[in-house]
Image 1 (cartoon, rainbow, N blue to C red):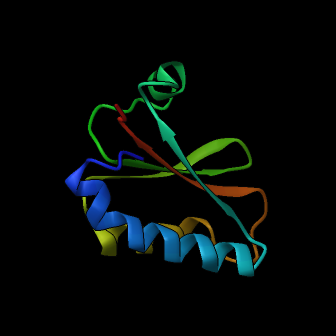
Image 2: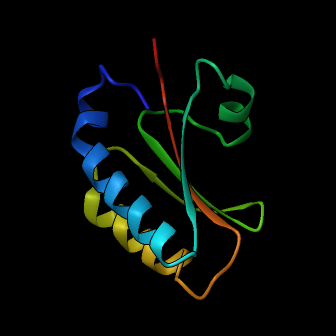
Image 3: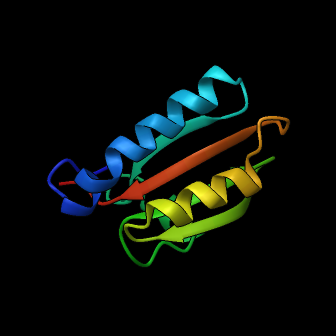
Length: 97
């Protein structure tokens, strides 16, 4: 997450809504991380542009959405992190100052 970032400002409400939905269905969790603070994780997940949303299931990246694309992010969450699944998260990795 990057409070100063225009792309984050656009995607934040979408991500917060998804977080509530996943939490209420007990099917996932949302984490927002800074590649500035967690640069090893950023490299491991091959973050090359911001924002990058990496969908993780059972410790494996199963989906990736780069940029401000609400529809693509929702479709990827629906595809990879269906409520019947377990051990899931949406990870938003963005730069922070």
